[in-house]
Amino acid sequence: MPGPSALPIVLDADERAHLEKTARSQTAASRDVTRAQIVLLAAQGHSNTAIAAHLHISVPTARAWRSRFAQARLAGLSDLPRSGRPRSFPPSGAA
Image (tube, rainbow, N blue to C red; front, top):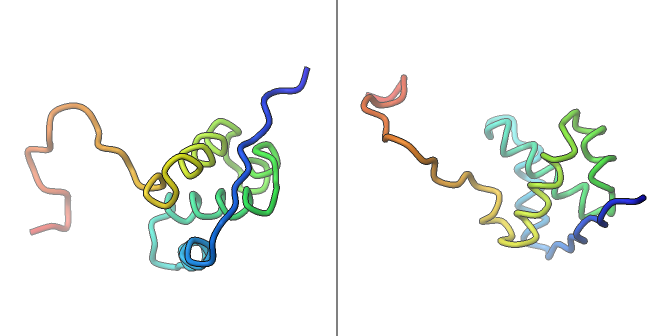
């Protein structure tokens, strides 16, 4: 039995330009590059399974970021606040 169909993604010119710039970036965080690549491949009509195979990630990861983009657009690709106690020390490198 086939699973649910993937959410269709349609990008406007500004979103596409932003995602392509991020996907090509040598200095952006790896997670941001992967998220941009997921959305760009989804906009080309690829399935979550094909995206996962192409990027060497899990299908649930591809599905999650596709869904987050569909719901909140570019803002949905940023990390959500984490629960738990705040850090008591600054990250290394910050001083």
